[in-house]
Image 1 (cartoon, rainbow, N blue to C red):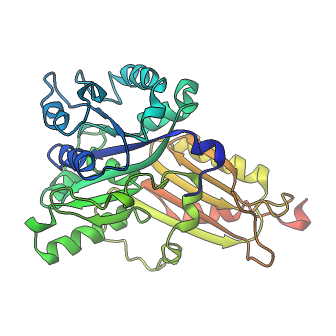
Image 2 (spheres, rainbow, N blue to C red; image 1 turned 90 degrees about the vertical axis):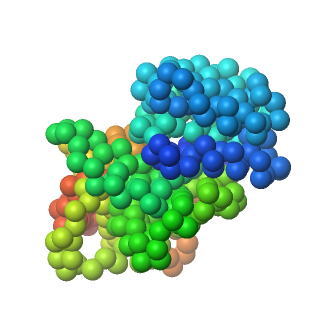
Length: 345
C-alpha cells in the first residue's frame, strides 16, 4: 500500500466527490449494504438547508447514531469547522471503525478537506486520506466539464476530475460504447494517473476504492510508464479542456537547493493552477535515498521513499503535474536546470 508503519495506525478517510446526481449517495449505500468486513463511519453532507440524503443512507447503517450529517453547507466552505469538530468527536471512537467515508456535496472542492486533515494536528494524529474517488455521470458529465464559468470562477467538475485518484465512470448503461470511449479519453487527458473504473448504478468493486492507499506520496511509483512518453508533436492544438496532466522524466541527480528554489517559485506563482503534483527524485549527495512528494495546490508532502534506489537502478526523476495552463516545455526546461553538474560546484 505504500504507507509507513505509523500511518497504518491512522484511520483511513475515503473522500467521495462528484456532481449532484452523479450517484454518490447510491455508492455510499452500496458500500454499506454490500460489504460486511469493515465497519464504516459515514460523514455525509448535502448542499442546501434540508438534508434529503441522510434518510437514504441511514437505512443502510446498523446503528443510526453512527451517521453524522452536516447539512448546513459545503464541507469545505462554511462547515469546515464542523468537519474538524465532527472528526474530533469521532477520534475517541475511531478504533471502532475501519474506515471513514466522507461524501461531499456536488459543489465541494476537496482541497480544503485534504489540507485540513493533513495540517491540523488534531486530525493528522488520528486520520489519513486514503483515496479521493470522483463519480462521473457518463450521461451528463460532459455538460458540467464544458460549462463556462464567470471570470475567475472555478469549474468544479474539472477540479473534481483533477484531484481524483479513482474515477468511477457511472451510468455506463445510459450511453453508447462510442460515447463512453470518447469520455474516457477526455478524462484521461485531464488526469492520466487516476484509475478509471466503469460502473452501473454506482456498483464499484470495493477492493479498488476502499483501503487502497492510493492517496500517498509513493503512488508516483505506480504511475503508468507510458504517461511520461508523451508525443512531443503539437497534438494539443485543438484541446478545449482547461485541465490537463503533464508527465516529465529524465535521468541524473538533482541539486537540492536549486530544486527547492524552483518549487518555491512555482508554488508561489502557480499554486492556484496546480491541482495535484507528484514526484520521484534523486538528489546529489543523498546516497541511495529515493525521495517522493505529492502536493495539493501549495500543500506539499515530501520525504524519503520506503525503498532506496536499488544497486544498478537507473536514477530517473519523474514528475506529474495536473492543473490549468501547463506549459510542458517550460516545466521541463526549468526542472532540467536543477540537475547537479560537477563543474558548477
